[in-house]
Length: 381
Ligand code: NDP
Ligand code: MG
Image (tube, rainbow, N blue to C red; front, side):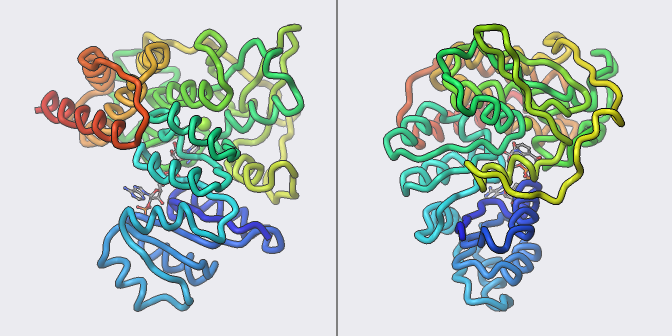
């Protein structure tokens, strides 16, 4: 039985991870759960999975849980609780399904505790990639991608020599604004950005998909996970989200991983790796689909993608600035305080005012993020 610590259990990835665990009671058990605000759902999860520990951000919610749980679970709160879950002694694998770069500290903590890390929280790698990879190497822990594109690439590269890889091709659905003109995108109500054509996900990543910042973050995530140079990463829009990504080798051979868009597949693979287990999920029927479509990514209509490549090329703390500016701006966009293209303009402006430097601690990253927050607040005002 593999003991799993699940950070962010009340979110989209968190709930789907518990679905996978429910399908394999003989293989997995949950040893830690964490949530931020949703105490009601966390209570249900604790009662069902009976973890050793659980944590929620606010102290009053932790107290409420203590008086209502029907389990011997020890309840923690705040960052201390999150880190306790990330390094819980009995956990063999930590699945980080937190949203945003606040996931970086628990990511580093889990690695330093020697845990295998199944990583959905891409912002960890975007903000602190060099630190995360350095710690993973130092502590000899496996980083297993949960993001569907990165899981696809990871699967395509099994048994291959990285020196023989030419490039990777990250597929992108193009999001809900894929076919709209710039003028229409700019005047479309932000609520439309929350309606993704293929995937049901948390609010932040859904907006990131509409702006294509999600693909930009994934480009940087891929750079770190697969040790790639900028010119080895291509993005291809593929509206059906059936091909989850591809790799091309030096002999021009291309290998792709396909499947229905269902996050439980990459989640389960990260948990069962290097094995594969049965999964009760819809199967792919290509004859029913009849056709798959592809188009070039348009960096004019989706400038965030261009900014992400730029930040990656500059390196050091620049991807952290890109990510932090985006994280701070997405809620302002949803509240209609900034428009779609103002978001990209503000990210670009903040990047232009940052002097990137090499970092070697989470604190250094947090300081940069605080500076970005100040910049966003000033510019919004
Ligand atoms: P959600 O917003 O649905 O869930 C986020 C989780 O993190 C929730 O459990 C939430 O708790 C918790 N959380 C939020 N803020 C904090 C905080 N400040 N402190 C502690 N916990 C917090 O996000 P998703 O599941 O959609 O995404 C999670 C990660 O996975 C992201 O990095 C995303 O990019 C990545 N990802 C997601 C995919 C998807 O299909 N959803 C696909 C590929 C990658 P609560 O709900 O209790 O407030
Ligand atoms: Mg993805």
